[in-house]
Length: 204
Image 1 (cartoon, helix red, strand yellow):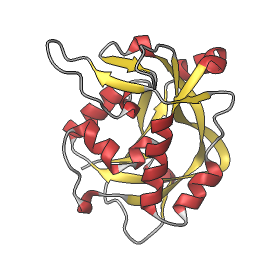
Image 2: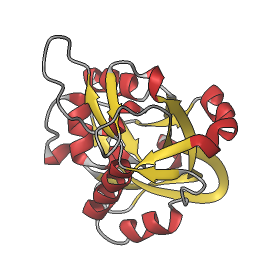
Image 3: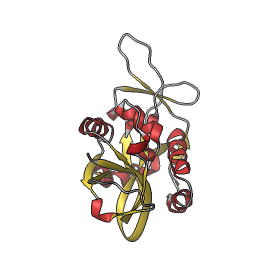
Image 4: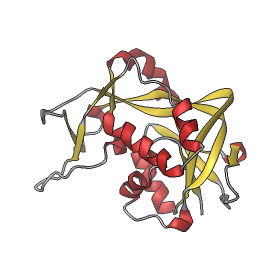
């Protein structure tokens, strides 16, 4: 079975489980790993209008639209990115592919080093931003917003990994400036039904 390496909100168990629609057993992760040759960047920008299946509101409940920024990877000689891998099914990967539609799923198995003796026993994949997504980021970066809940999810996920990975995460997390950090809420559009709140990291 394949594994997926998370370096943002996919480090968080709850976020992952919300996306694949099932609980993840302790035996299936997290596997604490370091990815070599990449660093994180705020290089994924998507406009709220590209996700019509969601309703976006600000912290006052008013409709909101704009550019949202998320973490992605970029190649960097000598860089190391801490994170977590999860053992998933092919159906899980399909669900994540829909969530991570701004990214390509790539095999990074040779670039990973285990932090503990607990190691994945199969190929490890991760999501790298598509070239066209990275290419448009500079033009709209000054208009971008980072959802505060996204930052909290990432922080919670890394805290659960313990030290030293949490400290490595803090040291390697790029500052969001000039991006604004705001409380943006996200609800799925449910025709004829009640719109329930969801984890906003699922709109990358």
